Amino acid sequence: MTQFLAKNIRKTVLKMAFQGSTVHIGCAFSIIEILAVLYRSHLRYPNDNPNSANRDLLILSKGHGVMAQYACLYEKGWIGKQEVDNYFGDGSLLKGLSDAKVIGCEVTSGSLGHGLSVGIGMALASKLNKLDQFCYAIVGDGEMNEGSIWEGLMFAAHRELDNLIVIVDENGFQAMGATRDVIELGSLCAKFSAFGFEALAIDGHDEAALDHALSSLKANQDGRPKAIVARTIKGKGVSFMEGDNSWHYSRLSSETYNLALTELEGSR
Amino acid sequence: MRDMFSKQLVRLAQEDEKVVLLTGDHGYALFDSFRKYVPNQFINMGIAEQNMVGVAAGLAKSGFKPIVYGLSAFVPMRVLEQIKIDVCYENLPVVFIGDGAGVVYGHLGGSHQCAEDIAVLRPLPNIDIFSPGDAYEMEYVLNKAFEFQSPSYVRVGKSDAGVIHQASIDSSQGGVIPVDLGNKKSIVFFATGSMMVTALKLSKALGGIDVWSVPVVKPINSSEIIHIIEGMERVIVFEEHSRSGGLGGCLAEIISESPSSNAKVIRFGFGEKFSEKCGSYNYLIKEHGLDFETLLSIIEQNGWGS
Image (tube, rainbow over all chains, first blue to last red; front, side, top):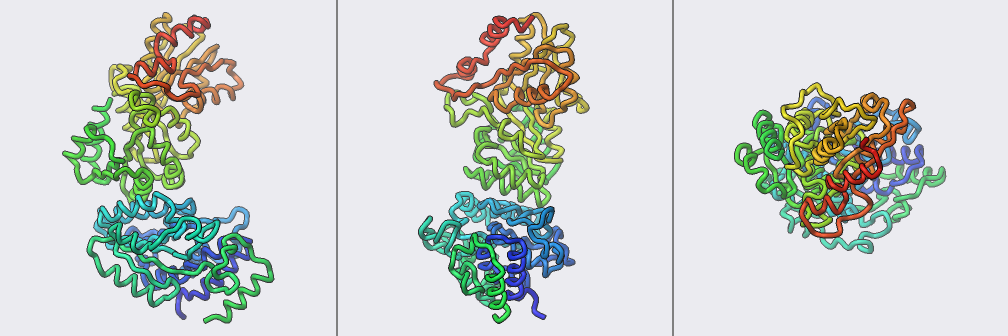
């Protein structure tokens, strides 16, 4: 059986969101393929140990998509069924934003513009320790509003952290609306390049393209940190959620849950 | 005090290659010897404090021992949320150094003066707060901070305020250190940082009052404080910090909750105002009413010293 099937990850997210009556479903659905490819083919955990000193690092700086990561950690076996089934229950472990105290989560994020810098610190430590280690930092396009992101990018390029791969989930929306209406970001690829990164723009739901981009960027150890601007669709995978920013906040009813589940079951 | 800081820092870094010094483009002359002897452990993070603290957290998560240096007006205030979430939440061993606390940068104006660093850090879980007043207290608190057991903040204020101690402070000593004891009055002075020297001068001028120095503002041992003030009618606190949330506020909280004490706490520090004028350190201390003469006259007028 193929591990980390996007369809299965989405189903787990959907179940958690329904169980916990949570928001941020759209934020999780846009990064499903990115996480699927990373967990399936790129993230190395020696001896399957999430705390191994030379593990690859997955920094979910846009903590709002954390349900997608929980679904992957569940498939990894690092989060139990009980925790998934009891999502948002009183006294439960898994919060609505990424938390470094959860096994497999590297940073506490969701207050935006934090995770990337912490990841850069870890990527720098990896260079200083001469470890064979990559740091993948997933940031939201809305998160790119934060000044600390740009501080981090300048520093990463200055220190030639070519073990850092920033992946922007460019779904075009942030909490209050379309990114172009809130703060026009222009070409993120051009901005990354101008900041000294090797940057590619790809379809963030095309697993083959993601896999290829990650492999080719990692192969080019030329001192430049890497960036993938992944064009995605907020709410991807469920037709009535796609591109509808209300699913940043909306909670599932029994009806919408069943509709969405049926659609996912029928998808490839 | 700054020599002690620089010397301790270089020694520590030479002994332990995991020690890294991060600065937000500050400390031009202060780090000359550090850069000379351990250049690979020195990182100028640029004028980008938020990223500096995040990177420090990442380094600490990966086994390094980061020391983050900035002016106290910027570290902690500007990066308080990074300190809270990136560092304190995970209890990471990052040492923050906030230089120029109080009105040390008198001529530069309000942006570079700092009256609120202790107050903003005190509510954060896990972080220790140090406020040394002379070279020996600096040595004492750095020995604690450089154990790298948890986050800590070292407040560096007026560095040449004067001498408090004649020798190194024993490491078994607590956070509250007796400096002038044996005066049989029902009043006691507590002071921290630069104001310790003023407190000692006031004690002398008033014919002798017990004086305790508080180089460790957090954690503070409540029962030790209650024990010290037993039988006292008045506790007077001096600090080059806002009266809100600093050492005075901390002691007032402890004492007000004590069923055994009826002592009144009088807090001397900055009031609710920014410095209005440009001027020397001594000028600004006077503007804020924290100079020896003003304090002496207030204490005498109120009859608190007898």
